[in-house]
Image (cartoon, one colour):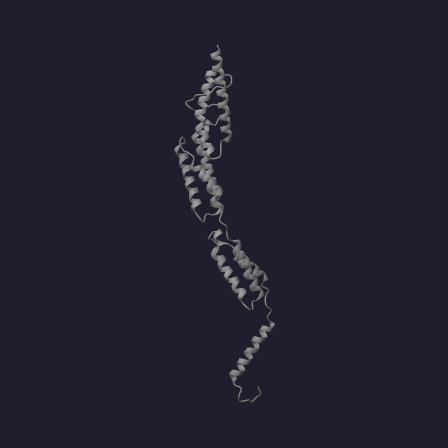
Length: 246
């Protein structure tokens, strides 16, 4: 515009220099690199949030929304881009997968098949409490890995104490039992005593074994009981046969 030109107003001059400044700013601006941000956003969108605990999910969603907003901008500085993907990556790292409950579920199923008969009341009560807690953790969709592990350890310990209280004293491979103070005889006893010992160990041992086997424990005792019963039975048959011959 020439000086003194009456067609040029002050408003036109103001608009012109403002547009010039904006153009200069664009010329000096360098678009940031968004490759890293795009990769992190793609990874975040691939997550199945149903497999994660609720804790941390809202922070993750907020960080993802902010990162996607930065991606949509036409002109963004590199520092803003880098901060966006770093914030999103941090939010992703704080998500927690729901823990596997298969081991705890199997332990609960085993514990539910165990009888508390013969155990003292305090031990039985502790076992019931641990079992109830384990069932509660199984039903809790938001239970953490630490809670699942703690419930399993507590139930396992309570079940071991309860089984020991109920019938641990019968776990003796030499045929001894606590049934009224009776004692099965060893190989040096006569046939009558051996037969009696076989009956005592069979009746006293079966209750303990049935409880132990249900929990996956006591297999070695079961093997001892079966072998002892077989040996005792064979001894009884031999003695009776020799008596008939006499």
